[in-house]
Amino acid sequence: MTSPRTRRLLQIFTVLAAVLFWPALLIVVWGELTPNPEPAPGYDKVLHFLAYFGLAALAATPFVRRRP
Image: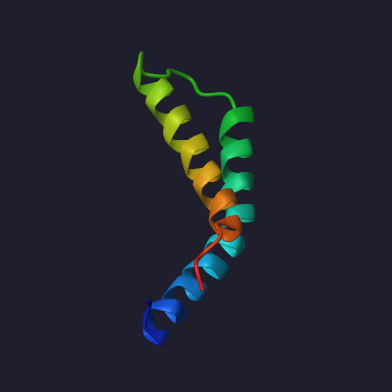
């Protein structure tokens, strides 16, 4: 059984994730489409992974079903 305070924090986090998704998406798309002069080998793959993992987490958070 979750407390009302915990439920409220989860609700705030869900709304925050839904709101932050769109600016994060724009930043990732902008970062993908702008040319980089010298990408570091290997490090570029880590940045891609983190960017898309973050987008997936932000997109999935509002749809997580919570127990009543």
